Amino acid sequence: MKTAIIIAIIVVADSAGDVLLTKGMRQVGEVSSFAPGELWHVVCRALRSHHFLASLLFMAVHFVGFLALLSWADLSFVFPATALVYVVTTLAAKFILRETVSLPRWVGTVFVCLGVGLVSFP
Image (cartoon, rainbow, N blue to C red; front, side):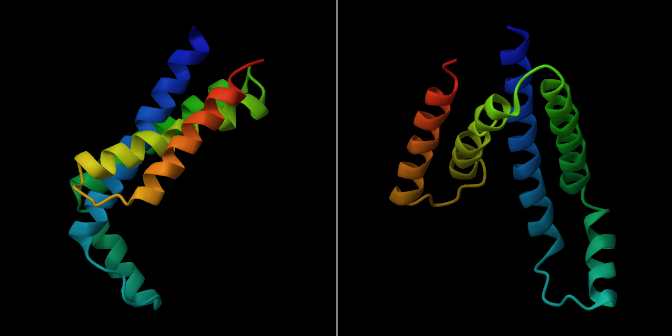
């Protein structure tokens, strides 16, 4: 029970962090150069984005949950189980970010679900 709750927290926090990071970086604008001065301006713009800052919080929750889960569960279980992030993030991309998700991406998402199901058996 405890493991399932932590996995759910990890999956939701990671997906939320990814969606918010995407929204934040779309506000910041395209990174067109990797020159130090340009990167500094991108970082400064990102730090003024509420979406970007919220993404950092969710990513921190994901990381702490991942560490906690690894303290009592096997990596060979934890890593595939948290791969449900791919499924939730694909759904969020489609319905929250309004992205077009192609058929091959949906098929890949189904395969991730099947793989997670297989790994969850002892």
